[in-house]
Length: 400
Image (cartoon, rainbow, N blue to C red; front, top):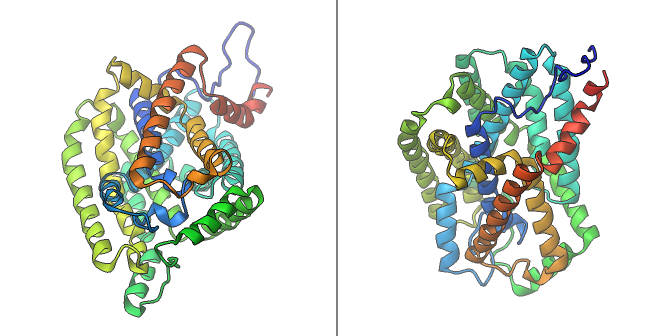
């Protein structure tokens, strides 16, 4: 690439803030905060707390009610929303590079490569539930389809969502037919003695790192069977929505109610099956993929309501847009700070909070993250980890 002329802006600025689609920042801000509502349970308690409300002896009605709310309005919804946006982000960046005369593919692949590295480090050493490595791997596939027609993007995306159901669908069928614990659900509820042993392991840096490596390695192995298909399918659908102008449509709100209704009814049906079979059963735990089906329609429904609000000058909308601009930093800080606090600063709290108390922590962290992101973006500019990722991916571009 030729060097830019003196006094002129370089031809390529990969993360320019010019011509940003305001709704994408707003939706991303809401999505990154919503994801934390579910993720926190596997950071502050044993993994099973994510999907079983009365996983310990202290569980009670308040846990049931919060679980009900999360299952119907949160679980898989914000994860779906973030996956949609990741696909859109790839398409937006690809288009901007092409408009500026730069060949996008090598630079996008370089950016995804560094995301994979960061995701693996995050998953192995901080929190096993990392999605960055997954998104990077999905992204390598998605960029091959950026030139597809809208119809092909949608049909391929839906096909991928259906393929993602097959593995856990087989597990669900097997659990029902044989009665075997194919999902390896532990004996519940945990006794105080068992919880104390788990807490000691969690507070030991070496033991927790070994656990992270083991569980994250397992997640990478099952990824081709479940999460890869689901996330890639959503990314393709997100690109299709971007191509038809959904994220700039002031009338997008009209989609909200029917999509919410569709996702809610499906989610309620899956939740009913969980209660019928028993929340602690292998069959109920196998319905995680079925609940994912409720995610895309409700996620697009949430986005439909946010799109018309994006141009609003309201202080909260502006703050949430700035939150979206720092989503990468906020995602990594959510897990890093939460895991370190509950393992090193206050290990006694790990596994001792009910679902409502955990949600109160989410509320406090949410307010802090919105405030910090707003101040950082308005006074400093690009988020610190966004800046690092950009430098890692594009530093050679500035010297070529």
